[in-house]
Length: 102
Image 1 (cartoon, rainbow, N blue to C red):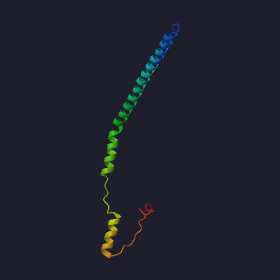
Image 2 (image 1 turned 180 degrees about the horizontal axis):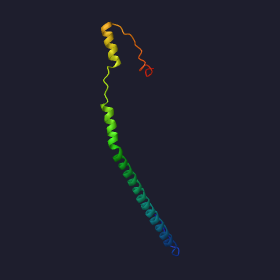
Image 3 (image 1 turned 30 degrees about the horizontal axis):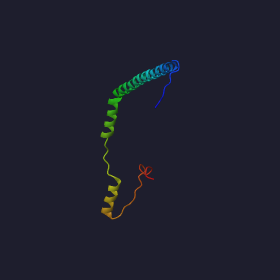
């Protein structure tokens, strides 16, 4: 249990000061929230504008990559076919692909 003693009005003055400080802190927090929300909205708007500008180009690039199909027989299939036909495998060094296979 908390006992509050009254000493000639000093407690009520301190209470008023504390309440005023709390109100000021609450007000400052609300202002910071408003500023932060505006910054977030501005950033999102900027990103949306950028997406709208580059959307068609990005989709076009992705479609080009997907549609640029170069059918090739996989190396393992060639080896297996040679082994099935001849019973042996002769390794042929391909200068285009030998650097990537270490």
